Image 1 (cartoon, each protein chain N blue to C red):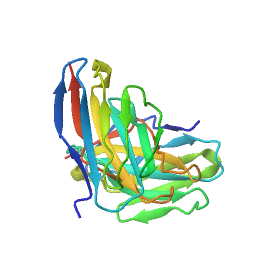
Image 2 (tube, each protein chain N blue to C red):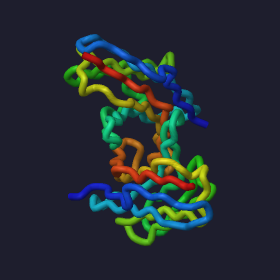
Image 3 (cartoon, rainbow over the protein chains, first blue to last red):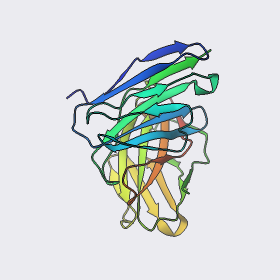
Length: 113
Length: 116
């Protein structure tokens, strides 16, 4: 199993550009989520999905869109990048239920100039 | 609303010293899970432990031990005989048992530096 994979590993954007961060998992997990990590702020939940076709907002959803057309994939879209979105983005997946450990991807480091 | 506080921003110890990382949480949920994750310099997040709010037994795993005290809303993590490889950022996190998903609320992390 590859686990949770994220692409790209690094990305530099200019303000106003759009892009999609890719996340895929091969563990048949129902639950997937996106977090951003900023210095001194820990990880904060952006969006999450409890299954294909179902998504919901987390703590910091503004400026990001998500969709979940398959169990395996959960892309995160930045429609118009802003410098405030410079961060490290982590995708995670798990079986449904708080008891289950979330498996995190390796992260994508995004810089918006 | 949930909140996790890790008041220690950075801790430096000499190898073989014991070190305790503090975690205090706030939640209105009656049942919840607490987690600790390790983030080494390479950047990935490594799961360390999960604790159910009903289970207040302390846990030991090798050099690691965890002290969960519901009365003080704390879930502290102790590393015994620290090693250089323990140098990392450690995150405490919380999620309610109900609500349809594992929505983790993280603390801001504690940077642990273990020196020779």
